[in-house]
Image (tube, protein in one colour):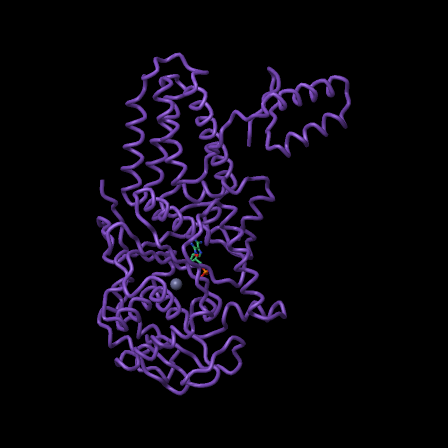
Length: 474
Ligand code: AMP
Ligand code: ZN
């Protein structure tokens, strides 16, 4: 079964064919580390993780590179204006490197909390200025870029495929850019590769002058080339990266190397919150901490951000989080039921009953994921099987296979509790539950609270219902 990818370059679904059999070279545009990643950013990073997990599921060795932008990304993605990191450093009155390193560490902690697999490499822009200058030199030599004083610009009129990714036409871009004329540029739509600015705090000496810093776009071209080579298989980002960022990356990389840059471009649609844009003024720019503070496990956020198709707009609300929580708890329970059935503790069906149901679910799940990572369709297959499990249609052998299938699903989605439910300490926990019941009956609230805390520390969820107390592992 072939993996079909919707390629933003050409806007069609295409069968994935790697440059080298068995191996995938993938570059993901990473965070600009001036602030903590919000759930919108996280949607894009989780999409990259999903893609990487699916490629690994298909048997590929994935060389995944996600960059850390720690200089050169200007406010509002514009050509002129303040550097996002420096602007934050000034607001806080601290060194920009401090801002960048702290948020980079936070970024890694957030990804870990969300169960994101570590990328092969996380290169930082500031560690690759030499590689950027090498590309800039080459582009000038080949006539694609030009120097004016301490600045260097890419000449968009020299690359006739400029605009192919985004659908923009150079004439229209020129007309738009004329509003704020930069006299130095040959064409209004030209973009900066290197900028001279004595006031910039993060700056490097080069043959163009003593105080320069790189443009945001050249950073990704240089880091992709350094770590993955002149040609790569897949390049991802959020939809706002299509223009100008990725359009400019293609121009720089292809003019420098003379070879096609990335074969497949994939872009995640923007996450919305409460049906609109996230904004500081609306107070809805949420982070992992906001979610945890409201009592949700990070995996609930992971599920909420992955459960839609990456090319569909996705709306975040707290009601969606509640639905997601229920959904993954249902998957946890499905795992538990399958475990008991496989061990012969539950279910009356003949051992081999329901084998075809598991096979059908697996086939549908794989087909859905191969169809441009269609997660909603893939999840529907899992929940159909869940209903069949609850109806007792699976025997022990089929349940064992169902369990294997659920592990495969989790290898890709990373949201289900798949650790063994029956622990060695079951008897101890039963005893604690009984002791808690006795304490409550004798109104010894301090003791019952103490036991509850101990159970909580062991990761046990206690549920007091009408017919008594039940417990399960978190
Ligand atoms: P930045 O840290 O601004 O460089 O953004 C990091 C990544 O997050 C980029 O790939 C953006 O395209 C992506 N991104 C930003 N906002 C959103 C959003 N609301 N939904 C999805 N992705 C986003
Ligand atoms: Zn980038």
